[in-house]
Structures are given as structure tokens and as C-alpha cells.
Length: 277
Image (cartoon, rainbow, N blue to C red):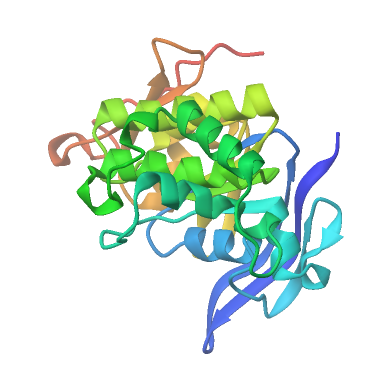
């Protein structure tokens, strides 16, 4: 299968402080790829590099078979759409106007949107279930609604890769599941590659085809959920005691943090209740 993203020996420094160290991995076209790790592990920095907003100090990134350094900003926008971590609160535009901004990479200089662009924007709003909000201003919406609008803008961009930085942060459980299901639908129905940063280990385990675990800028683990969501590996990474058993809905791991009175090694049962291949 073709690779949507290939990262090789990537290193990022902030001043003299290493943020990413020799990071190497690839993402297959059409994959649901989720990046997890503690605060400060380099997750957001990594997606900024993939999205072209940050240049590596060394190493390389390829997007759809082309070196990132050789891709113009406009061409990159045809390939990668970014949904930022925090939706803006003070954008004085309507939902329809914000979604239509996703067509910008496809327009010529000083060109106006045509009928096809309008139709794509309407399709994107229907797909993300925000059509009824089309005339509302973005700053009048809830956090979950704003997040869906930004995803609609990314869908409208018609890029082959959508990168999302913690899209479910600050959302309630129902909205979290809606966003995750929406990405799965986008992947299965349109073949979009989804690369997502998440702090929710259980959502990552349920939805990801593969998971990348970062710790202090290094890859601590990569693979299917059962290979990465393991008590010993997660405890070493996050520095807390965890119980890992099987999710009752799917044959994937489930993580439960251990309260203080159960956090001692001798008092916490950490068996992974997963079927063995």
C-alpha cells in the first residue's frame, strides 16, 4: 500500500532543548493513525512538522511520495488539511463562510468561489452535520459545534490527509464519540488518511488502526492498540499506576487510572485481559 506520510530520523530543537529525537515512522494511505503521549512529549510539534508549519532541524518528511521541503505551501494545502487544537473564539464569519475558506487552495489569485466550490462546501457541511448552522457566526457556537465546523472546512479543502490536534479536548463524551465516528466515516467512505493527536487512551485504542506513543520526544511504542496500550509501557511513560483490561465493546485494551490507595505495585492487579493471537 502507498504511504501518505513518511518521517525519517526527524529531530526538532527549541533553542538547545531537543523536542523530537530521531523520530521515524510512516502512515499508510487511508489509515486512522493516532499519536498519544504525556504533556510535553512532542505530539503537537510533530503534527506541526507534518502540516508544514514547522521545519525540522534534521531528518526528512515525505507527503504522498514527495519531500516536504520541495512542496509549495499551496500544493501542500491540496494534500494536508489541519484542524487546530483550539477553535478560534472571535472569528467574525458565519459557518458557511468559514467552511468555504477550505476552497482557498483551489482558487487562483483574486479568484472568487464558483458554483462547484459552493456545492463542495454544502456537501462538507452536510457530512459533518452543521448545515443548520450555516448562517450562525462561529463565535456563537458551542465548542463541539465549532470543532465540527473546522472539520467541515478541512473536508471542504479536499485534501487526502487530515491532521487533527486533540479535536476532542474539552468536549463531553457524546461529542467526543461524534468526532471520532466522523473521522472513521471520512476514512472509510472517502479514503482520507486521518492523523490525530489525542490524550484519551481509550478513544485511541477503540478507533486507531495504529498508535504512536511519544515520550520525551522519543518513540516509546508504535503498533496496534494491543501492542502499545500495555500497563508496563504506559506506566513507564506516564509515571502513574494503571489497570489495563479488555474493552467490553471491542477486543481492544481499556485503561483505568489507579487512585492513590490502589497505586502501590503490590495492590494493583495489572493483567491485560486480551485474547491472544
